[in-house]
Length: 106
Image 1 (cartoon, rainbow, N blue to C red):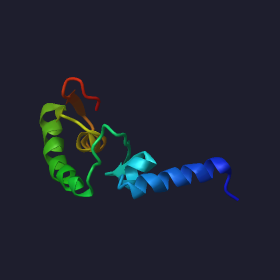
Image 2: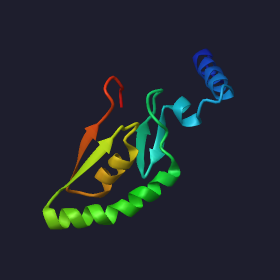
Image 3: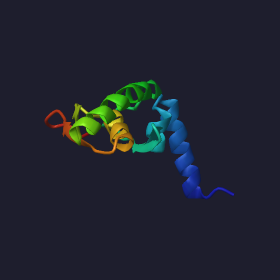
Image 4: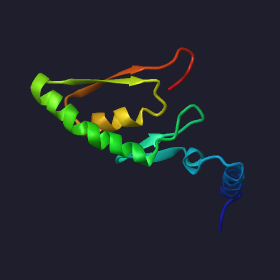
């Protein structure tokens, strides 16, 4: 049996999807490179093909950390920050510098 509260939430989710809102925005999160990232109206939805960028950058970041001791990742105009967060989780010794447009939440 579905409670009234749950039934209302289901109907709201169906209405949002019928209005073409992305499923993961309705759910409030999306998996990206093994991480669960929060979604809001202010964030871009990370694309699965962006994981290829992460995979391509990991060897470079790891080499930099091995040679220099750390690696600073600059995240410009972040939405969810998915690429940078994935690199941070995959490359110990990396850290993040985040920049975003003035007046916008990231």
